[in-house]
Figure 1: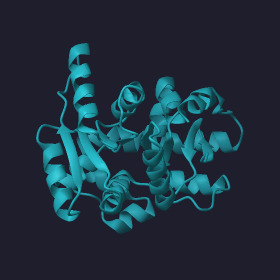
Figure 2 (figure 1 turned 30 degrees about the vertical axis):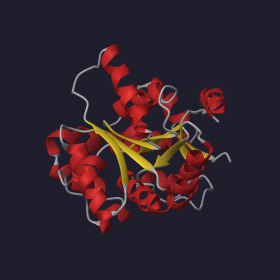
Figure 3 (figure 1 turned 180 degrees about the horizontal axis):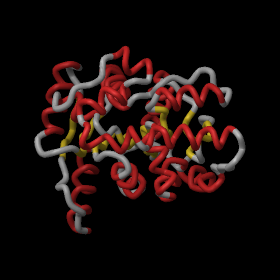
Amino acid sequence: MTIPRANILGVGISAINMTAAVETIASWIAQGASHYVCVFPVHSVIECQKDSGLRHIANASGLTTPDGVPLVWLSRLHGHRHVSRVYGPDLMMALCAASAEHGYRHFFYGSAEGVPEKLASVLARQYPGLNVVGTYAPPFRPLGPEEDEQIVEMINASGADIVWVGLGTPKQDHWMASHVDVLRAPVLIGVGAAFDFHAGRKKQAPRWMQRSGLEWFFRLITEPRRLWKRYLINNPLFMILVLGQALRLKRYTLAEASRTRACKQ
């Protein structure tokens, strides 16, 4: 089944909610399909305005989920009333919970040294019987061809069904797109800060802030040096560009990715 998408600044945001996301991913695993999932907040949509390659990756994904309340609101304005937020950390928890029934095998790739192992330990305590078949934190530098080949062999040998990728946007999205055809795992999911949140390295915003669209403010006050530009420049820019799209001052198309998506199905 093809999931419709809302055209938000030329980025196809999947018209989906958490239940549908989990069901879709489960169907890929059952079919042995090969897909990647981009989990996109507003920041990633803005990055796509500067990086046409990232926009192509997002539009060619199996799913590009609305990981931000503004993207949910805009998707509903596009006529997709059933859409709700598919937040990376919550998607991870939902699929770990589903693993108890289906026995999915998980590989955690990303973040800093020791974090994937801590994450696996935390989740294994929370979800007894969770099948973690591998963890790896790559070095913070470009990998050589031989190193990359070794990583591919390690992940393939693990027999993972889901590879969780915590490299941050846009790095994780480029990595998934370049590896989806060489990894045997049916599903790659880029979840960014979910590794640090669930491993206890960073605090998550309270649920009421997440639901009301104020998570960005919580993250800004907890990491101002790293995130000030993302939120104080990108968020106003996003609103200006969305207004321009609504007034048809600029037209955006999703057509560039249609051929790629068809090839992945």
